[in-house]
Image 1 (tube, one colour):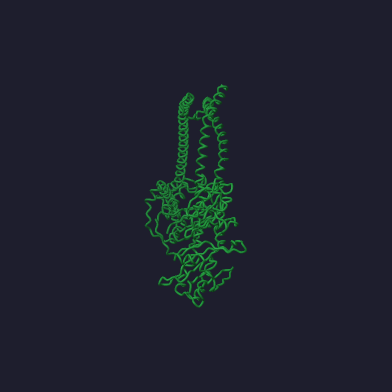
Image 2 (cartoon, rainbow, N blue to C red):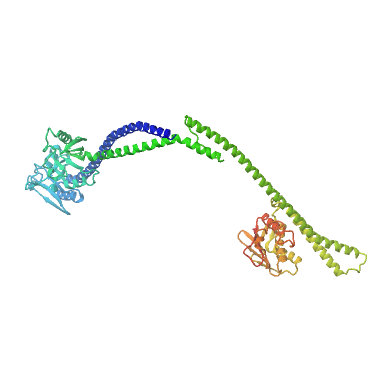
Length: 635
C-alpha cells in the first residue's frame, strides 16, 4: 500500500509539473511582453504631461509680460510726449516684477527738438529702477523695432545677448515682447518693447524636480539655437545642427527640422552613445520650441525591474506548483484515511462526527458518500432517541415540581384553615360564653350588675368586630388584583389631615393606651380624590400593626407631599422584623412565627389596596429601631 501511494504521488506530481510549467512560463512571457507596451505607453503619457505642465508655466510667465505691455499702451497712445513716455516706461517696470526692462521707441522725426531718433529706456537693477532718455541711441536697425513696424502687429523676437570680450554672459540674455503704438486715426507713432530675463525663465522651467535621472528641458529658437539647456557652453552659440553627422545622426536632424518647423510630437534620438526619448511642443506666439529629454532606460526602468520580478515569480511559481501537486495527491488519498478515522469514532459511539460529502464520481468518492449517508442515518436515529429521553426527563421534572407545589399548597391550605379556625374560635367562645351567662341571668336580674353588664357588652362587641374584620379580610383576599383594580372607584374627595385623625381615633378605640404622634407638613385644606374605604383600611392596618407589635408609646404618623404625591409614613419603636422575613413581608399568609396573632393578610391586602389607588406601600429596610412603612398616593 505504501508503494502504491508513493508511485501514485510521484506520477501525479510529475504529470502536474509537466502540464503546469509550460503554461506558467508562456503566461508570464506574454505578460512580460504586454507590460513593455503598457509601461512604454504610460511613460510617454507621463513625459508628455510633464512637458505640457512646464509649457503652461512658461506661457503663463510670458503672458504676464504681454499683460504688462498691453495694460499700459493706451496711456502712451493718448499722450505720446517725452515726459509721459518716461513715466509710463518706469511704471511698466515698477509694477511688474517679472519685467527686467522696458524701451519705448519713437518713429523718426516724431520729436524734432531731440533729433531724428528718440527712445526711453527703463532698467531694473536689483531693487533700483533707472529711466534714461536716449536721443542718440540707434534702434532703427534693431529687430525689436523693425519687426513690429513692418508687420504692424505685436510679436516676440528672439532673445538678445551682448558679447563681452568674445564671451557670452547667459545671465544677461533677454527676450522681448514688442507692440506697435498707434494714434486714434491708426497712424503708427512708435513701439514699446518689454524685456524679461532668460535666466529667470530657465529657473522657472526647472522649478520642479523631474522624476527621471539625467532628464532635462531645452528651449530651441527658430534658427535651432539653444536658448535654454543644462550645458551652458551651447547657449546662444550652438544649434541642434552643430557637430551633427548627417549619416550617423539622422534622428537628430529629423528632430531639429520638427522643432524648428513648430511641430509637436515625440521621437527617440541618440545623443552620444545613449538613447533618449524627446517630447517637444512649440511655444505659442513665438518660433521657439520646448522639449523634455529623458534617457530611455529611465523611462523603461519599471520594465527592467519587472524582469527581476518575473524571475522571482517563476521561482515562487514552481515552488507553489510543487507544493500544490503534493497537496492535491494527499487530498486524493485522504478520504480513505478520513473514513478509517470516522469508522473508529462510530464504533466508539460518537455518532455525531459528520463525514464530509465528496462531490467526485470515483470509487473513493462513492464509498465516502455511502459512509456519510450511513453516519447521518445513525446520527438521526440516535438524535431522536436522545430527544425522547430529554423530553421524558423534562416531563418528569415538571411533574415533580407540580407535585411539590401541590403538596406545598395543601400544606399552606391546612395551615391557613387551622389559623382561621384558631382565630375565629376565641371570639366565638367569648360571645357564646357571655350569651349563656346573659341567658342564665335573665331569670335573676340581681345576678349581674350594670357595670359588669356593660363590660360584657363591650367585650362581646369587640370580639364581634374582630370576627367581622377577619371575615372582611377573607373576602378581600378572595378578590384578584385585576378585579379589585376594576372595582376600585376613586370618586371620594378626602382631606389628607382629617383622614389621618380619623384613623388615629380608630386605633385608640382598640388600643386606648397607645401614644400616636401626628406630624404633618401639608395644609389642612389639602384634599385628594381617592377611594375612602381602601384608603381607610390601608392606613388603619398600618397604625393597628404599629400599636399591636411595638411598645405602643413611640408611634409616629408623618404626612408629607411632593408636586405629584402625598405620603403617609408610620414609624414605631420595637423588635421590628428579622432580615430573613423582610422579603416575605407582603406575601399572603406569612407571619413572624406560628404563635403570632393574625391571619397574615393585613399587609399584603394593604399593599394591594395601595396599588389599586395608584400608589404603593414601601417598607424601609434601612430603619433598624422598629418598623417604618410609607404609603405613597397620587395627588
